[in-house]
Image 1 (spheres, rainbow, N blue to C red):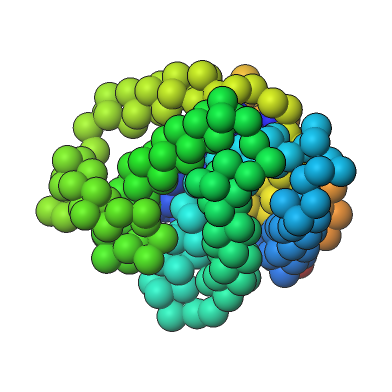
Image 2: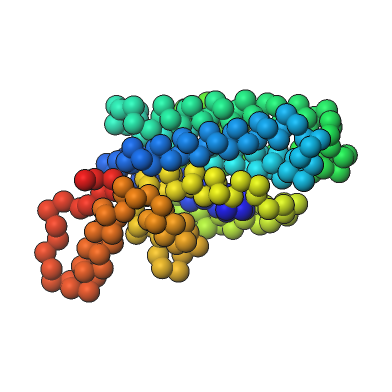
Length: 276
């Protein structure tokens, strides 16, 4: 999973954040464990590279890029997890997300010291990484404005005043729904902004895929149509989240049957991911 896909997944998660927060869908224990385990493994890999960049020269810059870009998703998902638990008066998502958030912030601090001092980095790479870092910070605050009320996301924003401004511009404080063309424009602009990234391949694509899998467990298959850009991620999750597979397959088959036979009575209760 390339860093560009991480950016797009962060946007997808943010756009559906309010639905997840208010919804009754419950992620399975295995999905939360997948997110936590893969994220912890990635933090360990980052730590090894940052601690000894001399012996990992080919991984050093790509690792810092991955760290800064994936921070967008970490912050957005942490805000959604907090919002979900607050809305449902539970401790289902936030503890796991908070643990990973703290670890990511510690890794970010170590990376920033290297970028700002220019140690082990050429002037060109230090400049490019600093620009990427600032771009990630700005887009994080943009996406958090779509997740929910600014006060809920303040702790995950880089600039709380900027978050408030973005939220005001989309009418979030007054509860007005966003205009139909607003989100596609934001997504297109965001993708264009990150297309200018130096373009190193992700050094931890396997773990990024697993992290995405854990997050996608909180979504229904209806978000991923057969031609959608995240269809492959959804299929990957089906094949690798064994304990969830049966419920998802039943849900997909039921949806297919209902679309083919509109006269069929709806089920009394829809199948949820992770139910047994």
